[in-house]
Length: 352
Image 1 (cartoon, rainbow, N blue to C red):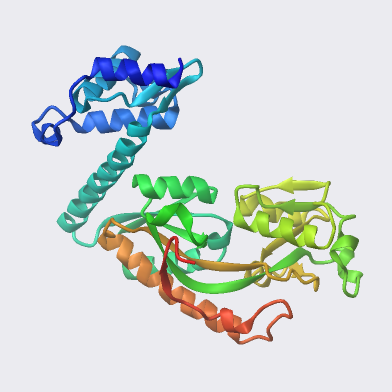
Image 2 (cartoon, rainbow, N blue to C red; image 1 turned 90 degrees about the vertical axis):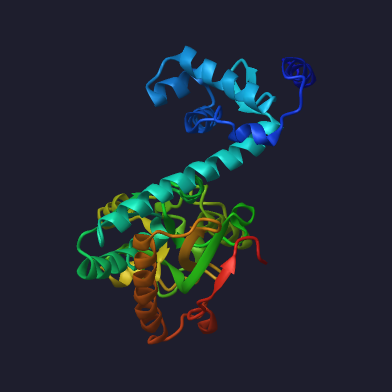
């Protein structure tokens, strides 16, 4: 249906402007917020019903009830499902925030009621899972063994959505300045160089100072396209007038990546400390200028952290301090600015 026609029909269906006070008269339920956010995530009333384990007519009726309360149409119906209207997008942003706050409130009540028992859910990807997060978790568990830490690994875009929806409490890994229009705040912990890594005994290790062009003859493993590191690596190749390796695997799982490196002649661009922590791996001297890893924590700006989350943040800062000392106790690679390795400040998403 044409958008203007849809808008016209919506205005006929809901002719009166909504009074905001009506949202507090008892008709708007939490189930309405769960319903509308699930429909948006699934892009279909049918899939939303499956996700919520209810029937499609119940979902349809609930959506109609909510649209009647608001006096607007929240979704446009199309041949491939539904998509939020302009007003729907605005309402969804608030609905997700309310649900996230309620989840957080429930967690706070549970933790306060049970003393030192609590749960913190942390999202991570390659840039945070190898050293920083394990060190912080072990330190936390020694201090508070009854605190449960749930680790979820995914690509940064998926983790950002989970953070805003309240499904995770914080993200640990590579920071991306300007992320999501200021809804998140980021804590810079340390900067680590990215190096080319192979298994020990790899044929390329016999080359004195191999260039990128000389290494294209080997298979590579690269980050997936949704990551900042992939974008930076593409710029390095293109700056040298080189295509991306044609013989490549694209991977975000650190376990899969390590097995691939150890069992083949693959080359990977990885944080320097990953290679230093594993005697089976070694780095190549090939420089990757301007490709560094700014590691830190991302938290929701307008949601107070739970006691367990605050505790994990403290241990992350302590672990990062130890890592910064390791990074500054060694000769600085030619493609790394030593002054950036110890920079650790809080900045807001969207800052230049």
